[in-house]
Image (tube, rainbow, N blue to C red; front, side, top):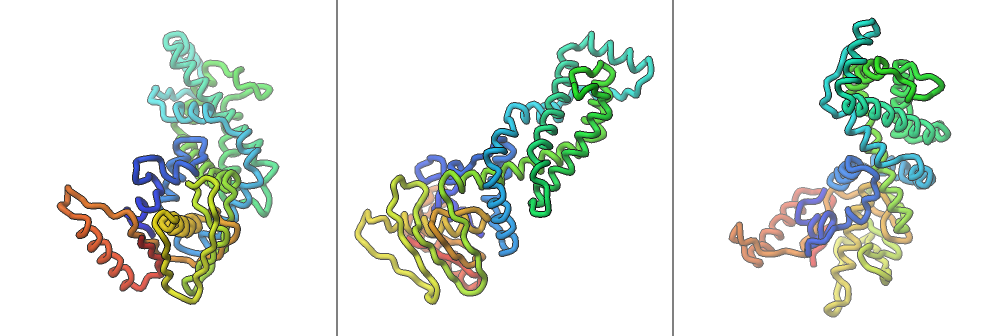
Length: 344
């Protein structure tokens, strides 16, 4: 939907002066993998109205649960789970006989650090699953987004397996003996490793979606209406998130294909152009935009030519770079795609 130059022009990942871009501002994820999941969403805007509306509904739903989410998950706990499940410590296949009991005791005596790491990892994983269960259980109903429903069911399946395999007494995982630790570890890091990794992947996606909802709340972003048909943009009270105490403006495009923006130098024309294009971009992620109300058509492409520079490595002067960019614009317009083009 956007090429590299447009990402640079709109300062999505990095501004032209090397400072963090819009993504860093809106990245409210708890985990690094959640941040990567959010970055994938920023790198791949949605292409259909149904997809956008689905994410919009999730963001609306998550807006109601943000405070509970923050209290339910713990970054250090999740890091412990990740370190445990990806550990390369040998996996012992034990069943329960005397020989296995002796193997477990010998491992605990000879490798106390490794044994403690495995037991702590199991504890961290169980605590993580219990926290997710406690958070999700009150909210599972017919209106719950599928992301949460799937996470809930996968989470509970693993939770029950651990409780059964570890033979936990009174829900106290610290009561596991050395043999139970190795049996449970084999079940988790061998039999169920792929399922746990898939569960974590689902969690990271939920983390990314909660970050989108959190940004909407923190920056007072309005979820726009996405429509099909003609190229339509109606933005009320538009502002740019990089500007403190901004003067808001309206932009309405419904029956014309071109808008010429004029004004003196330093009047804010470029900021306004970037604000409009950024709003359309955020709308195609399914999240809110910095305006008080908006209706936006579904677009195939967002194209900008704002911060064109020469390229010494390619031997391109500033003039040639602009000509090549105009050629790309012409090719895109001839393709028949619905596009919003911003040229400064």
